[in-house]
Structures are given as C-alpha cells and as structure tokens.
Length: 299
Ligand SMILES: [Zn+2]
Ligand SMILES: [Zn+2]
Image (cartoon, rainbow, N blue to C red; front, side, top):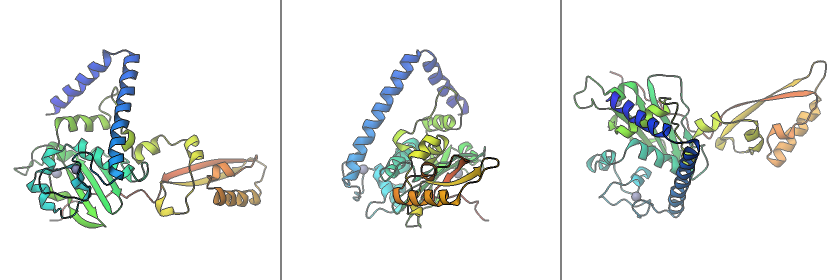
C-alpha cells in the first residue's frame, strides 16, 4: 500500500519535472480559475438554500442516493441512513473535507476551520470545522492509516468522523471506520510534507493554519477590530517598549485605544509614538472552534 502511494506521488512529480516554469504557472493559474468558478457555483446555490450537487433543498432529505448535503443534517435524517445508504463509501475524505471547508467559509473566511497542526508524528489528520449549530471533526492517526491490526474488519486504512449538533452527539468517532482512497492517501502524505514539489492548495476552503502561517504586519494592519470577542478570528496583544532613555506618555496609549474603539482600526495603526518599539503577538481568536480530540476508549 505504502509503495503504491509513493509511486503515485513520484508520477505527479515526474509530470511536474517535465514542464517548464511557464507551463507550471499556466497550469496553476487555470486550476485556481477552475476552483474559483466551482466555489462560486456552490456558494450561489448554497445561499439560496439549494444543493448544487443534487439540486434539492439543503434542508430536504429524500431517502435515496446519498449526497454531500446530508452532512448538513437535513430534516428527518438519522445516523442509520449514513450506514444503510453507504454514504461514506460513496465519498472520499477529500470530497467530504473540501465540502465542509466550503460550507464553513460561506459564513466567514477561515475562522470556522481549525486545522492547525501539532508536532505529533502519530497524528495524520485532525481538524474541527463548524457552521452555525453544526460541528464536524475529522481525525486520522498513524494506527488508523495502518488499519487496526487486532480487529478483523478494520485492517484497511481509514479515518474517523465526529458530528455534533448544538453540542449534542450525532455521529461519534467510534461509529465509522471510513475507508481512505488511494488519492486520499496521496493527499495526506503531501499535506504531511511528503513532497517538496507538490503543495496542497485549499483556496476558498482555507482554514486557520494557512492564515496563521501567512500572517504578517501588512495583514495585521488590514484587520478590523471586533467588539464581539466571541467571533474573533485572531487574538492580538501588543508589547510596547520605550527606546533607551526615553519614555512613552500614557496619554498616547489611551488615545490610540480610543481611536481603535471609534474606527475599528487595529492598535498597530492607531498608536503613534516615535520613541516606542511595538511588537504584536497573535494567536487564534475565540471565534475559532476548539479541536474535538479523540479520546482513548476506557476499558
Ligand atoms: Zn445534495
Ligand atoms: Zn481507527
């Protein structure tokens, strides 16, 4: 299995190596264009309450062909339907993850997707996405990738999904061992840094990881301060230091805070003092969902 994935990655890399710089740029440009077009189609329908894949209402559940909009908990759906109608056999991880990312980003860009990674070699995938009263978490550990060896039926590479509605249980991590496709395994390896030629692009499905990784002074200056901390995307605190032998008048700080309150401009924009050095410390805001960790089962 592992070799097959490596071979697939090598094949893509060889394909890239055979292209010129211009050809690669052209291909990336086209891919982004295509991606944006698909997202817009999805978003236009979504905002009208329509599913762009099956054309039914997002709230409607007709007990027949599974559709990605089932993940939005349409009226009348039960956990059993996911089992009986083999929902998770129909859709790859990639399809499910992209869909949930897109759904989350119809509300606001990035904030609803906590995909920050931890330095844990056993953790292959772990993210929590929320949208209104819904919350989904995807989780794959090394042992899932290898298949649980002591369980007869779960030896295939798989991942787990949890779904909560208004913080109430709907699907538990332990309910499904969802098979990973070869393409999923390739993507997982790439996002884990398995290739220096290929990078994963989430585009309109971008989450907090890419936002935090690329957050710089220019972006900070462009942020808007919110009164509603519960909806904040990024939390910022500042360290102000006077230059040696100089002082910072407290008045300047008070003025800057007032100006920030009035205009919504970030403190770094409103604070003005020639004798001061200012540095910002950023972290995830309160509006970002906390990751739902998978606990070890108690015996
Ligand atoms: Zn649908
Ligand atoms: Zn497992």
